[in-house]
Amino acid sequence: MSSARLLIIGVGSPAGDDRLGWEVIARLKAKLPDEANCDLWALDRPGAGLIEYLDRAEVCWLVDALLSKDTPGRYLQPGLELLMQSDDRASGSHGFGLADTLRLAERLGMLPQRIELHCLTINSADTLSEQLSPAVDAGVNGLVERLYQRLIDGMDHADANSQG
Image (cartoon, rainbow, N blue to C red; front, side):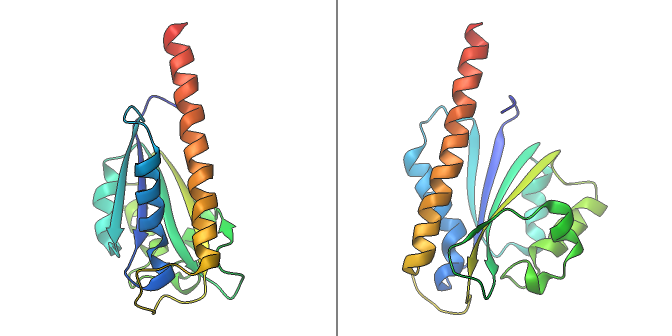
């Protein structure tokens, strides 16, 4: 990982499994050491307001739910180009969707230099609940571990380079 500070944004809503972005951020915060070179934000259906956060970052990982008829909790990492070419009904679970927001940020020249999308599939975004379904909860645990490992590996590389 480069020396640029990483921004990790979890997008969600209070609607059951759609809160998974928030959960990923909360679990990462609890697990990461203070010296981790990243900022963590949980945002409630930011729509175009997400652009303000993207414009501040050189490197950004976005975590969001992906409405799908597929098995809930399945990890997907859609490419940015593919997502931006899709219609938002297939690419997010919020009103002004992620694809629309990223297209607008690109037109405004406000996309980070590097951006990654990390998604988990959900079947519904309209259940008010503070609980994740068991399948999505398991997916969140897996995604947190995946992101945590990348962050720790990046810290180890940075430490080795600074001692060299």
